Amino acid sequence: MAFGWIDEQAEARRRAGLVRTLRPRPAASSLLDLASNDYLGLAHHPEVTEGAARAARTWGGGSTGSRLVTGTTELHTELERELAAFCGFEAALVFSSGYAANLAAVTALAPHGSLIVSDAGNHASLIDGCRLARAERQVVGHADPQAVRKALATHDGEAIVVSDTVFSVDGDRAPLAALAEVCREHGAGLVVDDAHGLGVLGDGGRGAVQAAGLAGAADVVVTATLSKSLGSQGGVVLGPARVVDHLVNAARTFIFDTGLAPAAAGAALAALRLLTREPQRAARAREVAAELHARLTAAGLEAVRPDAAVVSVRAPSPEQAVRWAADCRTAGLAVGCFRPPSVPDGISRLRLTARADLTGAEIERAVRVIGETRP
Image (cartoon, rainbow, N blue to C red; front, top):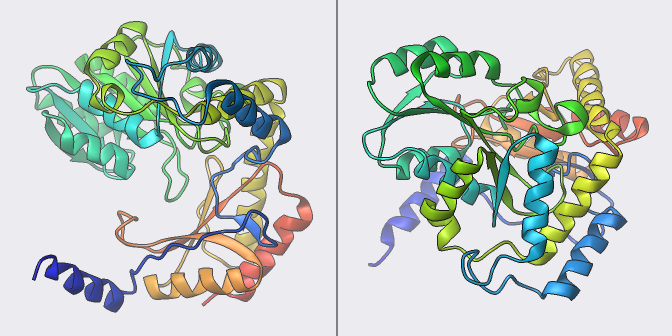
């Protein structure tokens, strides 16, 4: 029977406690949200939603085509200019998603005969970019510059090193300065995904790359998403103008994909301007993360010290992680639940978002619920 193997895989997932289901959320909810990636609390900010609405009224509900045909509006180029200026890079290119941006950067910057050195903890979008590229690939230990150095030493030719800046599972930060030093020893490029750093780290939320002193470097390319700190949707690649020009001509997820919807571009631009005006939001997100970690560990829970706005709490098993997250939801708290195959080390976790708009009372409530529902 066609697709008969799907039933076998579904049963295997059920036995392993790894079944995933969609849970449509209402427009308004009484749940305390520590599950989303809305780090700065901007997704529902009036200026951001008005930016989306105004863009839709002006430019329409969709971009109407690929970026190279009709999908580039004046709004897209305005957003790109301001993103590049904010993050300290020469140029920027906006995509329909952060996933598409990562696929574009990795595949277009790793031609046949080159080498990609990829961190074992990288996000799935970077991993898929490595798989789709025509280059040789080496996966190295997590956040290990010495392992990167050894991998680069095995190759004579073009190479890039690919890493998240802040890893989405535990919220730990990559050693960017050390990675850049290793890359420069071997003439390699550094391509990093700052999805969880933009809006949280750096001067006023300018990102982990800016915090590491690498913004604007000729050998550094940064990808990011507009769907986390900026409360919108879409992705961006930032780097030297010649790299961006190359992506316009060579990146398949740019050339053949419909451009980012005007509403998303308008929301992202409004959020970026708001963050520029209120840079303290970035510091507040980090403060909330530190407070969550301190309170959770004081309560006897195994929480990983956060480097940005992601706080993870270890769970005994995938099944218990799912039950724990469900019990939290029943008690009025939404949390993320990470389990295999999403976690490379096989350890299941609750994943908490430290939002800048959380109050002290909400932090206390979240810690109490997590402690009371622990397996």
